[in-house]
Each structure stands twice: as structure tokens, then as C-alpha cells.
Amino acid sequence: MKKTVLITGASSGFGLLLASHLHHQGFHVIGTSREPEKHASKVPFTLLQLDIDDDSSVKSFADALTRHAPQLDVLVNNAGYMVTGLAEETPLDLGRQQFETNFWGTVKVTNAMLPIFRKQKKGKIITVSSIVGLIGPPNLSYYTASKHAVQGYFKSLRFELEPFNIDVSMVEPVWFKTNLGNHAVASKISRIADYDTYRRQADAVTQKGLDEAQSPETVVKTITRLIEDPAPRFSNPVGKLTGVILFLQSYMPKMFEKSIMKSVRSAA
Image (cartoon, rainbow, N blue to C red; front, side):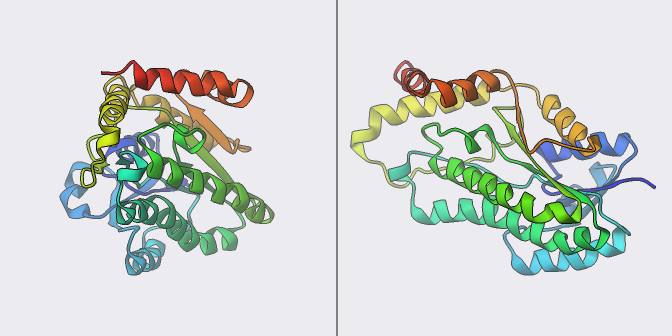
């Protein structure tokens, strides 16, 4: 029987690429979108309505899922977005909304699927995090914090799910060419003059990362490998220089910090 893979946020970015790839590989793919009617005719897989910020939407989706799939083999938590801006200049409401989607939305969907996995006594949960869930660059404080929270949540949850034969993995990409940058929400409300020069430099560094982002196929291949791996690793950084970045942070923290500060100071 075909493996059934559920992918949140499957109408664009990593989610769309992954869902299309897995469909063509013979998987039974169910994707989600807040507005599936806008995208359903353009994709080859099933696309269902889900707003991960909305409790009632998550519950309705969980009830509807059983009508589309007799079992669930893999959940890929992919839905999310990015808030950019300096920490002191970012309104708390914007920071809360970042957590509502990236952290609490991911938690709600995961919790809604756990009864299915526990009943089956098997399953895989793969969550698309970010390299910023392992490091802390400037200009992305709330996005970074939300990804750190997701990493911490699943670090603990994986032990609780081990008795049920449910594997938990994280995928931590660097910058890749998706809609993440285009859909980013920038804080532009509270400008503090003391930050004017630094803000311009930090914005330039962030934009450079987006402009020079890598092709996303590597992320799709990594997630596909985790789906097929009988014993997948928990942490899976993806992209050029991830090994160097994490090595420097762990074993040469001063050098790592200086490289971050240098990159900002040398920006336009």
C-alpha cells in the first residue's frame, strides 16, 4: 500500500516542491492550504483546507483527514512564515503572532495527528525548522526564537513517542530560494534613531542571504530520505556551510560571533 504523507503549507515553497515530488514518486500525498480552492486545480495531489492558527480549523481538518486516508505514515510540518526586524523595534503583537503560527500552529497540528499515530503504533513526524533554530543571527529575533522553541519541543517529544514507534526528525535549512522571503513580515512601525545605521546594515545582510539563496531541491531530497530511512536522525541541517557554521558556534564561539558582527558591519 502507498505511504500516506501529510504536508502542511503545500501550496507554495518547500511544501509544494516536496508534495509534487513525492506524488510523482508514488506516495499518497495530502497537502494543506489556508485557501485550497485557489491552488487545487494547479497541483496533482489532494489539497485540503487548514489554517494552523485556528483551533477549530485544526479540529475540523483532523476529523476530515480520516475520510481521505485509512492511515497516516508521515506528517511533515512545513507551514510557517518569517518576521524580520530588530528586536526592540518589533511590536510584541507581531512577535506573538510569529509564535502563534510557527510554534503553536505546529504543536496543534502535531497533537491532532498523535492519536492516529499512537493507534497505528507507528509513524514519522518531520518538521521543517531552520538553521536559525540552532544559531542566533541579528534581525530575526522572533523568527529565531520561534524556531528554537520548535526545536526544544520536539527534542522532548521524541522521547515520549519512542514507545509508540513514532520517529521525530527536524530539518534545519539555511537560506533557500522559496517564498519565505517574499512572504516575510517586516517590522516597520517603531523606528529608533539609534539603530538607523545598524538596521540598514542588518537589512542588507538579510537581503543578501535571500538573494544568494540556494536551490531548494536539496531540502526536498533530505526530507524524502528521512521518509524512507528506517532510523532517521533527529537533527538534519541542510545547505552549504552548515557544518562550518555549527562547528564554529560549538567549538569557536568567539570566532563565530566575530564573523556575524563583521558581516553586519561590512554591509551597505
